[in-house]
Image 1: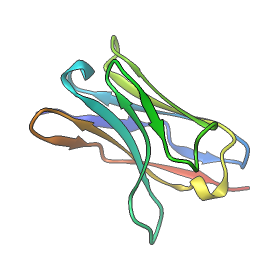
Image 2: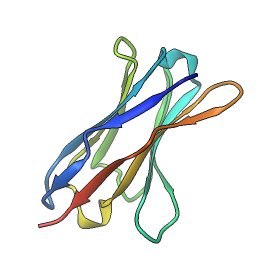
Image 3: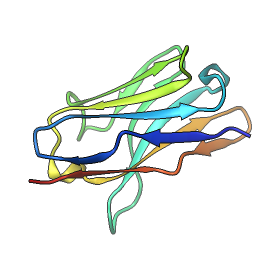
Image 4: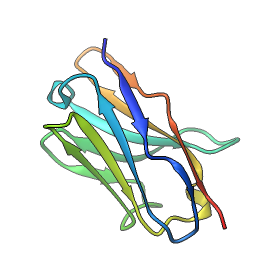
Length: 115
C-alpha cells in the first residue's frame, strides 16, 4: 500500500515563499506521474502542477512563473516550491501519484497566505 505524506504548509505573508514536500513510501519511479492539487474553501479541487516521472512538467496558468514542481528520486519525494505567494493561493494542497492501476492521494497540507 503506497502512502503519500505532505508537509511544509503554514502561514506566510503575501510575497513570501514555501516549499511543500510529498514523501512517498516507495520509489517515485513506480508512478507514471505525480501532481499537486489544491482546494480552497467553497471551491472545487484544482490542478496546480504536474510532473511526468523522468519527463515534462506542467502548471496552472495562475501559478506559472511562481511555482516549481520537482522530484528527488533518491528521497522518494515530490516538491512544490512556491514563490511570490498571494492570498488567492490559500488552500489545502494535496499530492497525487498515478500508478498503473490506481491513484494515490496524500492527506493534504494547509497553506495560508495572509498579512
